[in-house]
Length: 331
Image 1 (cartoon, rainbow, N blue to C red):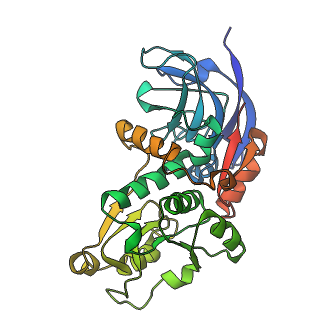
Image 2 (cartoon, rainbow, N blue to C red):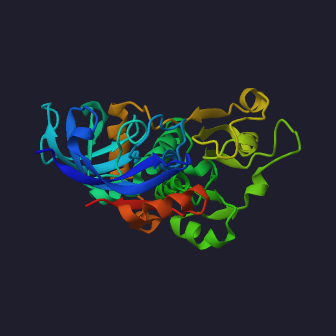
Image 3 (cartoon, rainbow, N blue to C red):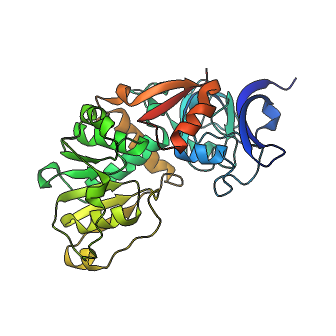
């Protein structure tokens, strides 16, 4: 008999509005794949909220189960690479976008999407990170690869109270960097300080409208999650030879900038993509996240929610009111 399980299903109602409800699904409804995974935890990301809102740029076909993150235990595998009982992590690729995602008891995915959970991490901890934390890890790796060291000055992090920003602050603090957090939420100052931010500045301070090609150097590097004029201001304000990473565009997809920061200061702009990041490099990032990059503040970054609480949490993140990370308890 086909096994049934619970999941969050997003569908359009008669008026064309999209609603998310808990529903019963069956294993046979899952897409074809090499490995069936019993999901224990997932996490809530902004992309999940877009998928749950009917955004066709994220998810083309509905009804659909979002959840771009999943951590759980292999229940069945058609390959020798993965065996029943293996604890694994799946983030990125097409999970939760057009492939039934982690907001359900089960997922079935290609073997090539799966990373073995490091021993130093619990399944829940891996979802405190999730895609947001993994993106923060790739961003920190880019700074390290380009030789940005703590003695060169502060690293500025935008979107500091969000998932990527909050984890990035924790990792950078663990590695000995001085961190400047950018936030438009005065009430979040204590939270950001607890993560390791040594300075907190408002967004308006990094939204230059002077039209200048270069600004006074202030930062050794930057992790930007918002894009637009704020990213341009960061690039113009980075020290000679510094590195700026870019992983988001909530502010804007445009970049009002000249080439001068690149050809006069040698600034490096590194785009961060966590969706198609090569699987062999994923393993290395996850190992760092489990070990030498693991923030002391990791547990304080999150709160747990159930599948039933997801619809309300989705509205919270869409309104920009989510602080830190939300781990979704599946089991």
